[in-house]
Image (cartoon, rainbow, N blue to C red; front, side, top):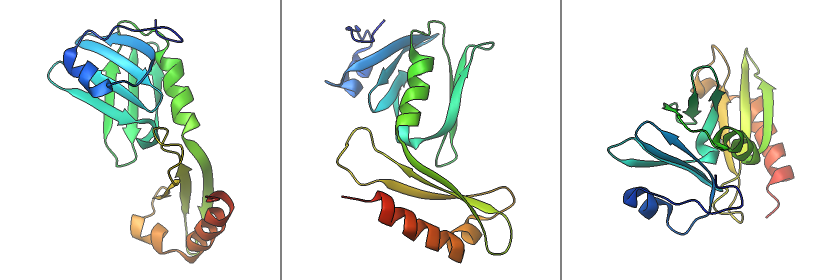
Length: 165
């Protein structure tokens, strides 16, 4: 389809969204094209075009049985696309999300539970600073995780190690 080749974008609005960026993989949903770019997934839902940056995908993947590409974003939103033509999108999806991850650490909180510290790269701008996030573990509130002294210490240590710019 598109890996190391050219992909024709048949939707003018999607073409405008993508601009001059290189398409690495292409597939199709029942309502239009789905494009894997170096920095994002771009697609149309039939009414509008959308883009999700790889560093904004918290988790997701390809379900071959249902032919669905599903993901949850770091802000808690979720989306899915049925792919009637997959091309190399499922593999690219996994590779690009993984490429955006610089660091993942699970921290045991002072009182109870855990939190996960992540550092992600914005693949659209390799010179940009890492994007640090703290996510509460199961049964832990965001405020507990963010206010925990062990999380603060580990975040400080990780930033000193990874923020080398």
